[in-house]
Structure formats: C-alpha cells, structure tokens
Amino acid sequence: MNHTAQYAILAALLFAGTAVFAADSDKSKVEKHTVKLKSGKVLEDAVILDKKPNGITLGYKDGATFVPYSDMPTEAQKYFNYDPIKSARYEKKIEDQKKANKKAQEAQKAKEEKQKAEQDKRNKDRRISQQQQKVRRLELELEEAKKKLENTEKTVGQDRSALVSTLNNNSRVSVDTPWGVGRIRTSSNNSAVRNKLMKEVDTMSVKRDNLAQDVIDLQLKLEAAQKTLNTLLENSK
Image (cartoon, rainbow, N blue to C red):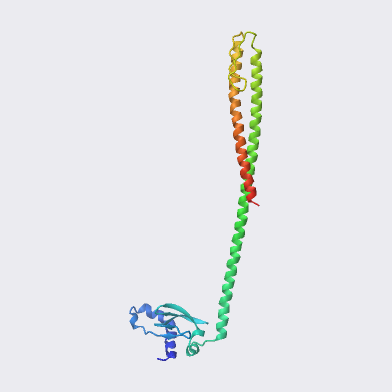
C-alpha cells in the first residue's frame, strides 16, 4: 500500500476511527498503519485523532503526538491540502491567543497583588489605629489612677492629723507601716474617736497600697503598648 493510500485511510479514520474502536472491542480487526515522517520518526499503528489547519494529532503504538504538515512527506501534504499560508496564519492566531492569555493572566495577577497590598495596608493601618487607641486608653487610666492615689494619700494624711490631735500628753503612739501611719495604741478619754480614726487610717492605707500597685501595673502595660505601637509604625514604613 502506497503512502497516499495510507493517509486516505487515516483521513477516513478521523471521522470513523472513534466509532470503530468503541463498537468493536477486538482491536485486532482494525487495520494498522505505519507512518514515516520527514524527521525520520516512525509511528506504528497510527490513527488520526484530530485535525487542525497546521497539522494532525495521531494516536499510535506508543501514545499520541501532534504532527505538523511541514513534517509530513510531500504526498501526505498534498493529500491533506496543506497550505503553508493558512497554516502560518493559524499558528499566528494560536500564538496571539497565548500571548493574550498570558497578558490577561499577568494583568489579573498584578490586580490581585495590588488588592492584596492595599488590603495589607488597611490591616496595618487598622492595627496601628487600634494600638493607638489602646495606648491612649492606658494613658487615661494611668492618669486617673494617679489622681485616685494622690487623693487617697491626702485622705490618709488628714486622718492621721486628726488622729494625732486627739492624743493628750500621756498617750503613746506606735507606727506599724512603712508609710508612717498605722495602728496607734493609746489610752485617753477620746478612745472612741481614735478607734474610728485608726480604722479609717487602716482602710485607706490598704486602699492606697492597692492604688499604688495599680499605678505600677498600668505603667508597665503602657510601656509595653507603646513599644508595640512603635514597632507597628516602623514596619508600616
């Protein structure tokens, strides 16, 4: 069988080959064809799977491959009405489509990257704003805590002065706290007043101690918050 006859059979299989293989499970009944290309490559048991303006896709013994018309023998090119101009136009169309797809993909990627960058900036700005609010809140809390501590210290001082004024020359005073106030033991006629004042001094001293600790804790929290804010601001540059 000559090459022209072989390609005629292959061309017929382009339309009927799939149906033949699907209807007949006995592949031995399908006539096999060997095709030799210009490049020297030999395709055994070849059948046409698809046809394009610039070539055909052949299924063969070892798989499938696209064969450009330019790689076919002259008689095959003639049989398939190979037109170099049409083939070149088709290939250019395919290449242009690939370039357009690539350009579209690059544009989409750039758009997504821009959106991501904008979202990242919004997230950073939001975190900075939240941290600034936290710093301001801690500053206000610290200011308020210092005022409370100052007022409590004044109250303790006033109570201490009032307590001392109730003592007579025969009274004895002992101080049990590091702030100069505390339990005062005395024996005078004003014991009821002194007991009330001593209780007040004890209560306010404990309150002052707690407030002093609150101030320290708030100062530490403020320092940590400010440090975090500085880091966020530095990273946003």
